Amino acid sequence: MKKGIILKGIAGFYYVKDENKVYECKARGIFRNKKITPLVGDYVLFSIDPITEKGSIEKIFERKVELVRPSVANVEQAVIVISVKNPQPNLQLLDKFLLMGELSKLELIICINKADLDEEGYINRIIDIYKNTNYEIIPSSTKDNKGIDSMRKILKDKITVFAGPSGVGKSSILNAIQSDLELNTGEISKKIKRGKHTTRHSELLELELGGWVVDTPGFTSLNTEAVDLEVLGQLFPEFDNATSQCKFSNCIHIDEPQCGVKTAAKEGYISNSRYNNYIYFAKEIINYRSRRY
Ligand code: GDP
Ligand code: ZN
Image (cartoon, rainbow, N blue to C red; front, side, top):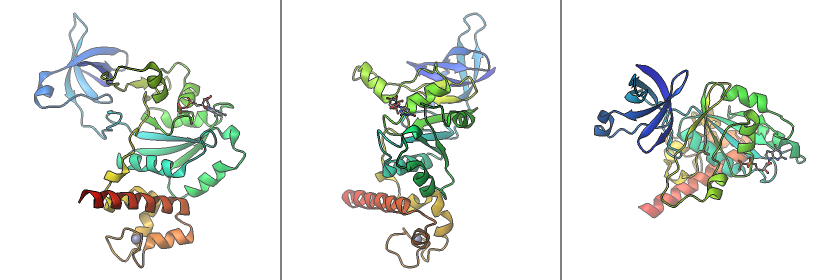
């Protein structure tokens, strides 16, 4: 039996790669009976028919994570890309992406692209705002190859999804890392104008340096309203230490007295930008709840 990873799935066929090559496989009936659908990113055991060389997926290893949009298993990290200009940084949107990444339990990296256009000093300001988040921040420019080597180091041997607003340079960065990657960015799929009923499945693209990149952008629906208010604060890593200073264990860090988070925000350990976006999301959730009940 061979061990491999599912790179692509089309109409019941799965393309599974072992160390050397890709095999076309079908899933055993037991999965259908158990209502388990193999996912791109699944690590599997499969057997090969010696004559046809076609495979049969026998076992799916437990998924560490399961992304919903795109539907990919075992993604380890997300690179959230923003740019200093065209479009300008929208930190509320960035925080929303980070939130979705935290919710999916991914390692998160912030890439600030178009560093060549940084006349306003956005990069330093953003580094300062996120200094206590523990997110790695990579300034990059595909015009002068800045940050591309750092990005290669981060991507090596891992499964990564890229996310971020359109136009920030996600495809350009991946092309700078490896020029022959065939990406399906939202823009490109829109241009092709697929039929309404053709669902687009994501694929894993294997990097020469080792590792895989999901070929479609991650977190295309940023549905923060569904997050539990009690959980929201836990999705801001720099709130961690501060919450232990809150008087109330169920503190949501807005109007409560003796709130460690508010104090940390006042003292600058938590940046205003992050705290204000937290409040914005919290109010979104509260409004959503009051509409539902
Ligand atoms: P995506 O929508 O995030 O995939 O963005 P693209 O990769 O399609 O890039 C959008 C536009 O930004 C294109 O016109 C690129 O040439 C441009 N671009 C990408 N990276 C950089 C960069 O580092 N500096 C500058 N000045 N422009 C860039
Ligand atoms: Zn609090």
